[in-house]
Image (cartoon, rainbow, N blue to C red; front, side, top):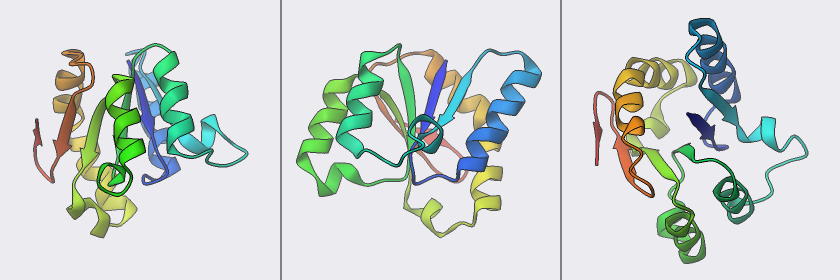
Length: 131
């Protein structure tokens, strides 16, 4: 599976999770937006469209793009991307706590992601993942 983290998440988290994936040999790709676009964030509409054109990507975000920008929300819905939205509580966590909680939920996230509910949005809470 291919996981994409936007600018709302720390780049070292994606690197560490990729390291763990390589070490365990599970074959997952975990990529941060800064790795994909080293020249800078091209904007949500661009990267959503780019991901849509490739094999199914699974998005991790804390961005409330859906509430602020109808065009971004429409692009996200049309993209077919599965989204794991980290709820507002994650905005108040430092990188250590955010990383720890996401790694703790990783088995549940993988289970949900394997269902491949195209275009589905999951809400990630501190201790659970829900539709």
